[in-house]
Image (tube, rainbow, N blue to C red; front, side):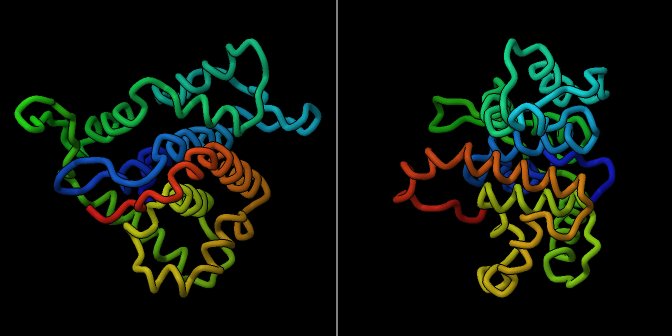
Length: 231
């Protein structure tokens, strides 16, 4: 996984159709919010406090140097009451224009371009076609290496990326149906945080649980809707 790629950018890269620049996948905002929370956990800025019903505690609210992480950290630090991680994922998923803020971060890094196009000659929408495919290619290869390897030493951010991509129904962008079937057990191991350090394991499990809870109600109502296809 490219070193300068944030987890939330990785999820958005998988969700964006390379040529059309439109967003694909289900519940991408929740997976993105989960990725933001995972970054803050991995940076040691927040933790789930076992002594306070696993509610999120802020350990360090100084600027991270990343605008979106700082916005999320400020929201948590300035909240009038403490909340569990799953509740924060839901709140962070509601950040105004979240998906476009993430896509714009990718545009600022020169990975995608930011364009506006007319729909039916009446409506305008923002699209983000890919202009530098290398970061996504490296991300996809790292995810494939993690899933097809039998190694027990997996880079934590890749394990988290696989877990979040799975929760947003984005793994079919990276693997065929047969590959997903054949490596189902391995993906489950990555989701459960079985192959990473204790600190990363807590992040993987907490984020996966939070994202699953965040999407379970809309998932119930959308059970009969078709799942997202390819670009």
